[in-house]
Image 1 (cartoon, rainbow, N blue to C red):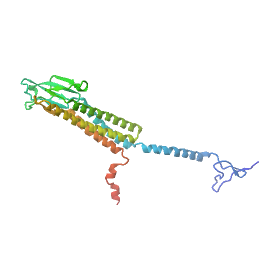
Image 2: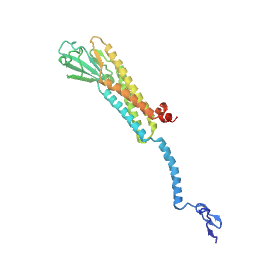
Image 3: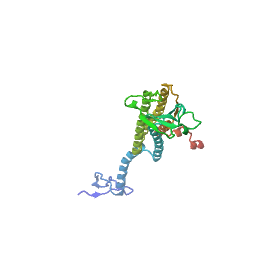
Length: 288
């Protein structure tokens, strides 16, 4: 029989491999390490393998500070979306009012238009401010009649005060507004995915969507104003005073807010802080 013995080193540890067992001077195949030391080495090996994956995932994920900034910028963009929906859905883009004594009776007629419909309203001259020369404003009480524009369906042009609307410009303005709403929806989806998956990649397409939507909203206002000017120039038999109303203010503010929100998302998607690149650090300046 082969004698079994264990050879130890100077510190008392087995020298025959992890098992430390030799048979007849020939070391056996090293087995798994036993005891707390072997368990610790095994766990450390697993943690090294899994830790690298966690570190790579953490490099792509966002921190709590970044998540808070993204939510704040998303709130700014949501304000722009709400203002856009409010402005596009209402019909107080422009108010048209003839002189209040143009019809030589106790009532006068005013109108206010939007992207989708126009409303005419009959007002009492006694209710109008004596210093005001034209009929209005449209917020005064009185019977009103609202009709949707038919050039979206049948192509028929609307006629108000013997003037004809320019349907091509109206349709272009409405389509720009609808396409901007579609881009807002796509940007909101990108931000939702970025917050749920904790990935900064979706911030760049979201910033492009919100910046383009804001630019399209402002372009829609410009086209609508050109449509109003073309409407007024179609006939000069009835003098009209036109005034942009509060729906235009909502849409204009919405365009500016959406562009600001898109720029914020673009800054948050950068791999470095632009403020630290542009502004000198106080610590570095005080140490020199």
